[in-house]
Image (tube, rainbow over all chains, first blue to last red; front, side):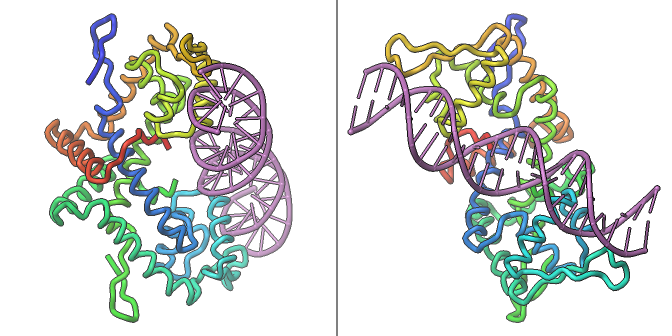
Length: 157
Length: 157
DNA sequence: TATTGTTATACTCTATAACTATA
DNA sequence: TATAGTTATAGAGTATAACAATA
């Protein structure tokens, strides 16, 4: 697993790190999911934005900025792309004319459940061989790491 | 956790998927590691290439292509960058003058153990609160997923 | 013809920062 | 002045494909 240096200390291998394995598996799982939502016409970032807006109506770009952990420039581009696909509308807020109110179109409201089903299927594909308990345990472990390190935003990167 | 559609089916949330959590944690862990190796002057892809070459001397770009799961164009750029940093040499193979023999410089051989230590530290930082048994179990779970799905190359992406 | 590696090109995703308009 | 959002620019990382040299 590890070779030795002249000082006798072992040089750890790539695969001795849990971080390596998480990234290894995660990249495959995400790449596969990306492919499946792309067939539905959206990117992963767009899916995350859509699913967030589906639950939280009347969000502003600033809200999304916080929730997705991205810069306002990046959010602006995602929203422009979704608007172009007729999945959302942006209207100037009546309260503060600098701000925007985002709302999903009917098309988007019909699409989100389908995308959620794709996410379910993707999870089944990769983790379906594990017991429900094992999967819940794993989620709990990931959540614990999130807590321990104070991670906050949804990482779209 | 999930809202209901007009047909009564629940629309799963982002955080109900194990894939979401793996990506969430993995992105943070990798981003942190990236930052730490960048301070040492290399990217994650370059670290992976260096660590691979450290164990497997006399590799060719074609070998790396398979092992890192990247195209030859990408490998070529990584090798050019590492050569520019004086971390490796590329010499025409005596056997087949189309191929190259890659060898690490002394500078690289001194650097790799330091980078490996950074990887160790990164793992400690994020998973140090878990028991050795729990960490080994997690790695085993990731390896099992790898096996079940026939994943092969080291994902550098 | 097939293979090894390089290079030109393009694309995706994101950040930074200058900018516009409101407040 | 400060804030919300847009846009221009840049950079990282990778893929595709045309290319040169060699087999």
